[in-house]
Amino acid sequence: MPVLPWHKYLAIREITVKGGERIQAETVFQSLPITVGMSWLTADTQAAREALLRLPDVRDARVTKRLWGQIEILLQEREPLALARLGHKLFWVDTEGVLYAEAQGGFGPILVEPQTVETERGRRLAELFYLVPLRALMTSPGHLLNSITTIRFEGSTMILSLRDGPDVFLSIYDVRWELAKLRRVLSALAGRHPHRIDLRFERAVILQEQARP
Image (tube, rainbow, N blue to C red):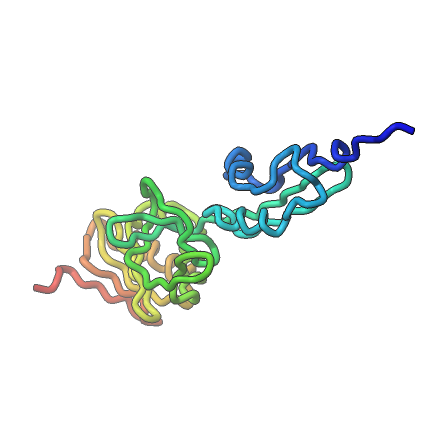
């Protein structure tokens, strides 16, 4: 009676990666403790998942054994929301407030010196409630976003610095409404260039024409 080489049938034949749009498959394979040709039975899927979670762009990962020597990897990538500046470095901030990767260059509004805390998955914004107004700003329609250079938070106030323009103070509780009001104010200024625009009052807009000495 012939002896079948069962080890050949229990070896990993293929590793597939799904869900990764920005992460290169080669980066995934290089981080895995599992390779084609290893034993399918002893492949440690939990160790593979933990290795994938150490990749900056990975929010979550699932590693599953399939029949006939298949390993399936399903990735959930981080969704970039904004750029943050800490010291002289720029970092991508995702929709959960995690500063997950250093950025080589910046474009659009940059969140300046936010308070952060260290977590098991890395550095994260300390005040997560700022994510709501930040998301409202970054997804606002129109071209106003292109003229904003920096974003700062002070308590319940968001401070926007406009390129070649004023600093704008607005409440974090209804950012879309405040931005619509800002567009109307900028249109009504007709060439005037105030140093500061304060939109935090319901029935008034406060303009400061010159910087205080």
